[in-house]
Length: 118
Image 1 (spheres, rainbow, N blue to C red):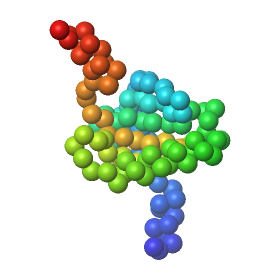
Image 2 (cartoon, rainbow, N blue to C red):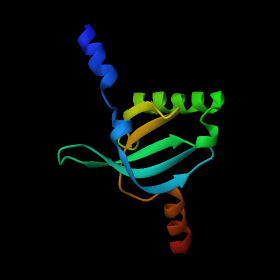
Image 3 (cartoon, rainbow, N blue to C red):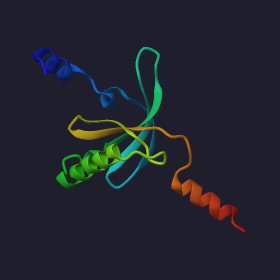
Image 4 (cartoon, rainbow, N blue to C red):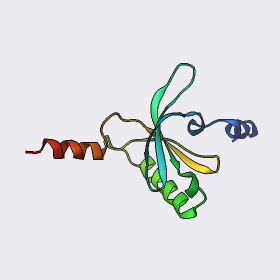
């Protein structure tokens, strides 16, 4: 890689940094997710932005688990699994930008099945 390319790469803002969060969706034991958009110049698409919770950002075990999750997801290719669009560190914590798939979460689906079961 040329010196210019290294400098450009160092100055580039990642998708994680430019994906803007629109609404909070869920918070788990170690991370929170929000729906957002990514893109520029009139091109946008919906994404999910997943961040380690602020109070756990400095916990090494949590960080390793988050990195492992991103690595595993990035290597899986299946119509039923969302794709990792980007992974980066932002403000001292890891951030994953994931493909957004419209649909129901498992809790909503379970509630529907229970309520409509005969």
